[in-house]
Length: 83
Image 1 (spheres, rainbow, N blue to C red):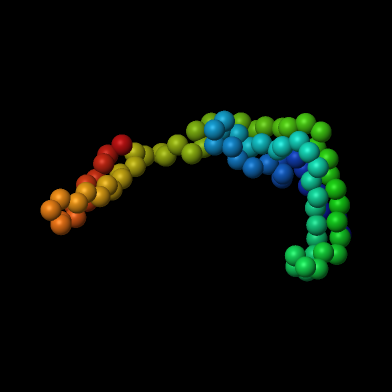
Image 2: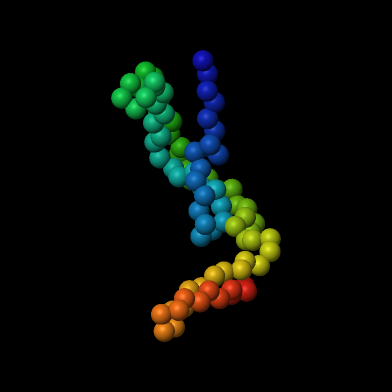
């Protein structure tokens, strides 16, 4: 069996820079029936960090209505805050 892994497969999303980032370093890939029964292992070294920038991936398409909670004299009120 052969499983191909590229640098993008190693990426995680960084919200601060709106990009998928693969950190440089050594990755250990383990295959097994479960975490206690590893049957194969391989190492992969990524020599430099890689980034894939996206634009506004987390920006909502519509304004979000938010509920806020206030408590006045033992009554609870919900107020809709329009963004």
